[in-house]
Amino acid sequence: MSKLDVNRREFLKIAAASGAALAVPSLAQSSVSSKMIGIQVGAISFLDEGTEKVLDILQERACVNTLFLAVFTYGRGIAGRQIPGYPLPDHGKQEYDLNYHGGNFATPHPQYYKNTVIQPAHAPDHGDLDILAEVLPAAKKRGLKVICWMEDVFRPDLPGIEKVQERDLYGRNMETLCVNNPNYLNFFTGLVEDFARSYDIDGIMWGSERQGALSDSLGATHDTPPIDPGNVTCFCEFCQRKAKERGINPERAKQGFLELEKFVRAARSGKRPSDGYYVQFWRILLRYPELAAWEMLFTDSLRETYAALYKTVKTAKPTVPVGWHIWHNTSFNPIYRAEQDWQELSKYSDFIKVVMYNNCGGERMALYVDNIGSTLFGDLTKQQLTEFNYEVMGFKERGYDQIPYTGLSADYVTQETKRALAGVAGTKTQIWPGLDVDIPTEAPNSKRTRQSVKDAVTAALSAGAPGVILSRKYSEMRLANLSGAGDAIRELKLSS
Ligand SMILES: [Zn+2]
Image 1: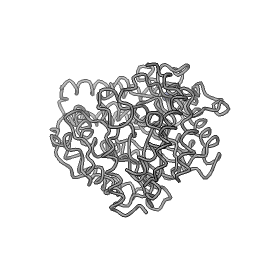
Image 2 (image 1 turned 90 degrees about the horizontal axis):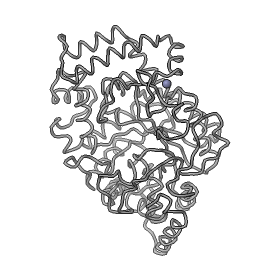
Image 3 (image 1 turned 90 degrees about the vertical axis):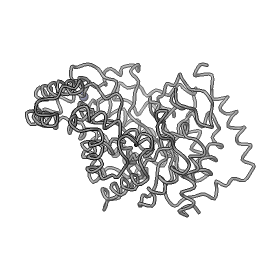
Image 4 (image 1 turned 180 degrees about the vertical axis):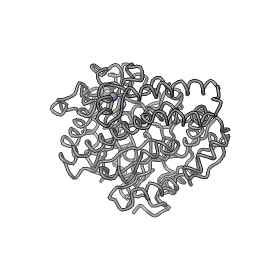
């Protein structure tokens, strides 16, 4: 089936059919929580199931009062149907959208995209459908808020995109875009201004799941496979110029990353340095402190992006809240956690979604241990490294051999919520924990249940969070597990 087969006419038919069901009084109207109960949802779900029906389900089952509508991404994580190869949930069309494309699922207004080579393209997936124009009126009628949710995931086949792509250690183009390339910043400031001025929205959430070259070279993430140490970024002309302005010598940085690359390759092939892995890493870092400086160059540049987006939205419409999705790696990699300084971020954050997905967190923690245990901590057993990481990160969880099958506990959610709340203490910034509902895990690994969703939501809200965000997208969630969120909210007597 062509991606244009599902067009707006067909969509209106589905919407009209589901509208008829509204003649039956809905429970939804009476379920309004005093806390922000959010869910991430993409355009495809409204198209597949009908706008009113989706809103009924979200309100009745999960007491949702805020939609985080995926309005811009070229990625599959937050838009489109279930990832091909994983089981489809018990709602929506029972087939994979193999021709997913992505882009702007609303209507881009060209006047906001003047100083960038990145085209403000409307996502071609659903014809001329503008998902904000479709969902906003229906949501407002029910008193639901709509927050525009977007991430910096692009396709390599977009016109002109190669001019904005990051350059790796050897100068090769990567698929990720450079935060120091003016085309990148101008595109995203244009995008958020467009949403803020063109639609009556209730907020903007933006996310970038990336870290600097030092962490990437060491494989300090749960990503699988970890990035190749020769592909670390970014060494483009803009990054080199910015480095020089900060007093960092780009050539020294490159030499350091070449040394680190050799270390990582040798470690992954099991060649232990005579003084041990940890000591050898420190020898390289002490010789090339530029490695740490390059990591912070990225982190500061991403912070500057947050600050610029915040300022743009506040200038366009001061009442629109702005906040960020912070990557799950903040639970695994202590270096990345150090870079997420909540006090610093709070200066340009009305809210922060701190990812604390506890079900898939077990599988991911074990993957992190596999990755970093093959480089920096090659002298520790997987179990020793897991225990070390729990101690430095403040967790008490099961062993390395168990967590892929059990997930992390609800107590992990409690600890992460308390940590984030302490981090923003004394500021206006709200912490909205991101909780996973059916984010796919490998076949033998732990799956969500209604009870485990309930436990996670209860843990976050009981620890004092003023809201939660059910993640990553409604189109991958099972209905019964969505009800686990509603169970928690009703039991806590947070819904009126
Ligand atoms: Zn760059």
